[in-house]
Length: 185
Length: 312
Image (tube, rainbow over all chains, first blue to last red; front, side):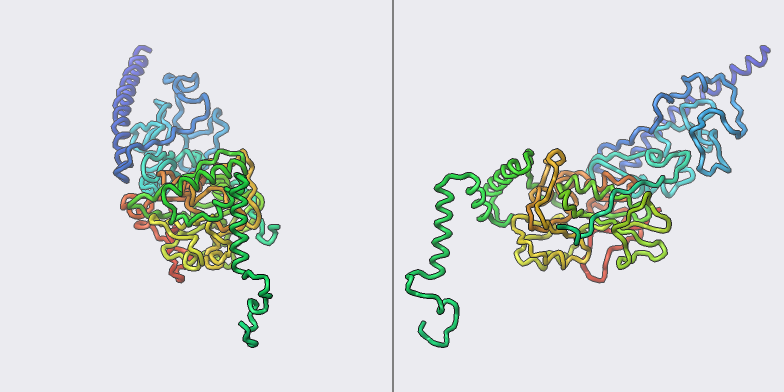
């Protein structure tokens, strides 16, 4: 029993070290990311990325009862009882929750190599598979931007427009059609 | 005068009245003007000022200020809104360009109605500046078989793609060439504008435009008072009178202050891109250099600054 407990503490210690290391790395990457964005235009003084679109009251996940660090996790892909509102339609045959969400720290995502990624920088995760789109997004070709064409712009995260669990755009009801010119009285 | 072969109306007119037609007309004009001045009626004075107003380019700064003040007063009486008219000059070293990603656009017409609200367009009758064309994916860009009046429950409809068309802001604009009174011209920053007070409503430009981008105010525009955009530009989105032509100005009142046009901001899929063609680091230049772009009716040599492209 004692042996198991000591192993647990050892693992927990290691995990916290990794998390601390990665979060500082995340910080530095954020600067890198922003400078990479701002080099697309020298005069840009401010690049703001919209906050991630969380459902109210679910984040941060680690403080909830569900995802306490002590909870034992079954890492084998399986149907989960909770988050039933999420239907995965994003290469669901090959992927599942923990391919993006970090098992040890639910407040973060992780890249394929295990590095943690803040939800605010989820585009790094998306860019692993969608590299050309990430490049186009950084250049301003892909994705919506608002603000100033000559200065500060607001970018959107990939997930601001694409539901990460089902990224295909949902059809919209169009606004009403114009009237025929000959109908104008 | 007594030449029997002279059959002109002047010769046929009775001469015993002692005054020629020319004298009579000039006299009447002065009498009316004097009456308007003498009566002290503000409305008449405004009408007279409007009647003798110069072309926008000929106005001195002082005259422009007075003209704008007069217009703002008139708008207040007409719409009950404190409409502010600016005459923002073009930014030096800027030539605007626009790009639209045809593989993104879903034909939702959010841009059409965003534009109507932003640019004080008439709600009834509605002549929107942006027309969204629906075409078959199989047929490609085929303007002859495009449908602007599609009305689906949901878009994009299967097998269709969408192409919004508005003013292409040509570098070689045929509409400008045909205007008999020079009421429309291309600004140094590339925006094709109209002086609504100088336009005589002949609609030559409408027929000259190969893109159907110009629209005529057949009746007095109706805009609900609470929906008026009070931030306006003289050559842009100030409310237009009946009988003049209007069109997209790339939101001149926004872009000359550094903002994106409204359609860029309301597009839910981010298909619309705008920027300075002379800035090699702008989004628009990235698109021109890295994507295959197309312009509409290239063979007409209108040289549009509105580019369509296929994104990822």
